[in-house]
Length: 288
Image (cartoon, rainbow, N blue to C red; front, side):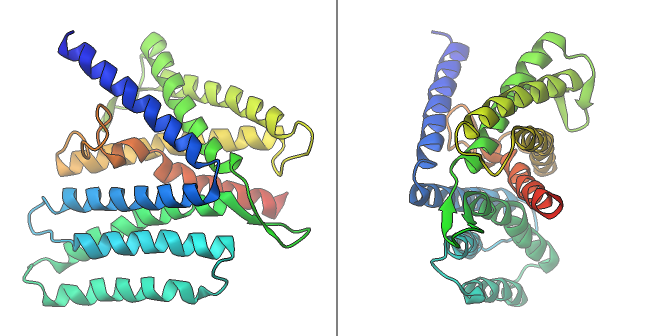
């Protein structure tokens, strides 16, 4: 077996296990919260390791990671009703203040870089991942009870996977016009359009399944809209992470996932798609 074939086998096995793990976690709300808290922590830890390689950058890796994980769990507790008071976010705010004040006592000459990269970890990773709790848990307007909707957060990843697969197939067959050659030379307009078409088909299927019998909060048209939003912002998320890696001069964000790189490589699209999905759903509520 050649090295290329071996890498393909490793990549395929990792991909299958990854999808099985992701889909399984959404079957149980506690499993979902646990897994994404872990993903948040691993992603921030990986991020801090990358930025600390830059000259004149020293981010407190441990405290920054703990802060991000705590913020995720605080949002989860707030959305599930375990903690009904905003006071749950006070320790997080204190941690952020500590990270700012800590810059006063380091020997680094460029404290602004430290602060900027530290806060970016919270805005770029912790905040987007925490929004999956907003997708998953909703207080019913009828009985006031909190309900877990596994399909909404799961669908975001189904759309992202479908978009990636459709874009790869379409781009390989028809790709001629580069989408963003400065950042990602491999992406094409034809691939992106093809991926979007695949996502629309997947959204229609999910819409039919979700509304078979008891009506879901999203109509079939609503699911299609969600799919398009996820596909567009997921593509931007991929490009944002590519720009991040180019800025740092690295090919992969890590090697924790054999054949797939690091956590940021695997979840880059979701970091833009999840908050975009939340905004989309609230916009539907506001104008629906």
